[in-house]
Length: 385
Ligand code: F3S
Image (cartoon, rainbow, N blue to C red; front, side, top):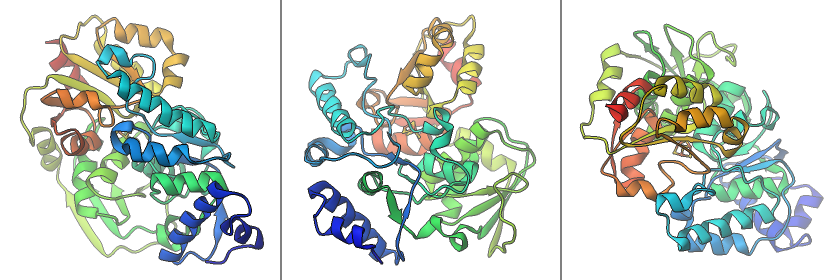
């Protein structure tokens, strides 16, 4: 990969240890993927925040870094709700380690929102055509497929390196010819809400890491596209997809395979596993304001009798205190900075009901807990019966 003279200086250590290590990571990636050069990015989104996932080794590595990010940079969810962790029985040791990780990132100038939906907080972090270095797979899919920006599925270290240098290697989804669909998926039946997570759960297994283009009977909302992309990124490795008739949309393309997903295949995902939920957790990816409003309306006048989590960002929680108070008057908990997958709390339960195709994939794998899928309405019915 070609480096400019100033990039060579960084690689040679002229700008210190941290910048040198960051450049080494990007050069290694660029060489592996045959990138021609580094390109500027608009923002970075960095995964690898929960103490549950990165542990002491990750904390030690982060603590050795010094420097300041060159572009707006945000963190993925952590392992705790930073304000309420005691309520959830998190140990003091875990909380202290978690705060040390967040402080290490903050010292580098990174925003500590701890959310997988930063686009719901600040729209100008990613605009159509922008190059980004984002690492949360659901946010990558949203940035590429809904916003029309360009990012590869970065790992935590490569996103952090890109944040520090303000650049990323030019390969993969940054390049036009790598952004064309190669498989067409015709979906039968009209979908709504969680159905898109169920569709993504099935489609990700079919598509793998290819780029699908969907033919759908109705136009999904941005939250439904968020759910579809998140699920495909978890059951497959999809980073970009298209929906016919919905921008952004490729001008000309030809596919090598066509498949149809029938209506019953989507309803089957709801019945795929059976267990009696002892926790209900929504907000994977983190809830938008529209999703919080929908849950408030579904919960109105009801009292939940099971643990009921609604995950969102702290910024949205703080901006909408009345909405949060109305939701929490039902007994449900609006949880911030973390989620049902990266928090260690969920491992204490046996069966989790989720409204997300991504959580349906990840909760059994990463928490060792059975998971069943339900619509938002199903989740409220199960919790309040
Ligand atoms: Fe976000 Fe956690 Fe789901 S990071 S996408 S809520 S697994």
